Length: 190
Image (cartoon, rainbow, N blue to C red; front, side, top):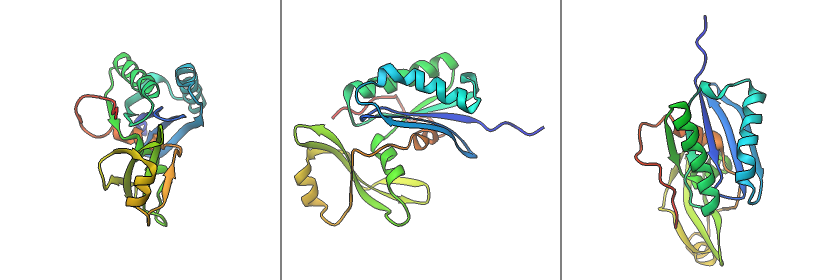
């Protein structure tokens, strides 16, 4: 009898997007990613249940959760982190945080474009940003996360492409659940 692949859940709600993915070592089993504005709290459980039902996976089959910890919308971050913590506690599975900017980089960067500036709107003319590079399926930051005016960022990195308010890869976050304990699950508020 063949062993069933372990399934991990990825969640990101740091931006206008609600991103969910079910991942196993065979790859993405199912995913949902849609701009929901400020309706994260209203939609997260419904969309998660739909994702699980569509893939034929029961909640109790999940082995871990990876959740985006920001930077991003205060309310959006709290919805994602609270949902991840609640599910993890109820299912007695581990939960790990991962950078929401890295999750965006994982979806946007490629072999053809392995390096770029990832940004999210921080309001009042500012952005949350970081420079990231991708090698294979690994995404690494080149800079610390910054909060600064967009114009300043463009002056600092004029040769790099900018990826602004793009959709995150929740599958990337699901893979973060495999990383041994990274410490307390704390949202990154800048």
